[in-house]
Image 1 (cartoon, rainbow, N blue to C red):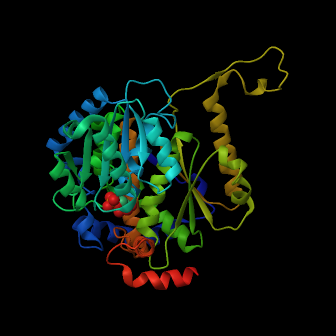
Image 2 (cartoon, rainbow, N blue to C red):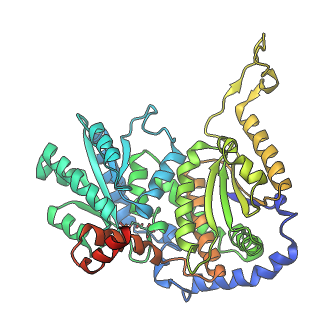
Length: 444
Ligand code: PA5
């Protein structure tokens, strides 16, 4: 089980002195994180979570997942941002981006409450028609508009189909342990609840019930996921010279200071798309503040080489790439030669398709680095639960260290509030009356 940093393709972009120069800053950041005296230190529950999680709740999560698997064709997961991305990312990477379409003995999973688009919601509602379904509503604050709105609709659907009493067996709420509208509502209705710990922010919560319940319903081994994260927790306490997580945080900051303000997380596997969305939230919401921060973006190759490839090779030199190099695909496909060879593709045959994908990677990394794009490589053996848990923790810790080196509070998100207060004022939410007229005047 491991994720290894390969710096072979950075030689022309980062030198040893630069790494030695930033080392002390990374060590200071790690010291702040571990002694809990840095910015946002009331949100550090994720640091020891892989070894210090609530075992009783963990058993309840597994039991609830078994009940959902037994009585439901569909699980509706309601949540947004950190209350949604991690679960979907892990399920698609561990199982498949086509999870709902593959042959399986676990429920289909649909995600709602992550937008306010009515057509999307209507489609999911109609997919539930004639099916048995359960709902996992996830919101730490319990007041976020998008999931709250979706939950109002699905709560009624469950009650209309099964009645209030059976709804108690089919609605599961993951929220604050004591406060908030969702907690109060769940207690009043008698729903089983799971806790998002006070000291774990949304984007660091995938290894709490937020991610674990949907991931377990999808048939993934959450014990192995936590085991991988626990190994990462131990491994990434090492000193800088033996710590790939700290080195990755260092390299990101070195490149940023040299004008590489966009990181593109690259994979060669479509099942990584949602993991990249999770990474974008983790780093974007953690680092993008005080008018600074690396802009996190993502691509899947070779797919996006046919859309973004030109820009990466030849556009503004603001990019660096971080490639998650998954060594072993879930399955392989042997390419048979064809006697007639009318399509001229016999040069690709008599080998596994993963070999062709690897050559695409090798060819691309050479082309992009020659084009002036630094490439950080993160080598992941495969996408088993243990390795995915290990990688999740790697990125969480790298993000925290990187944010401290950047000089921001990686654990708050003050900028997220601006759109919300405008939207509430425009919708006439009680308490926002003052701003409504001024905003409407601006809109004309
Ligand atoms: O990372 C975060 O804190 C956010 O993305 C939240 O997870 C998101 O806004 C959802 O919040 P809540 O869980 O309170 O509904």
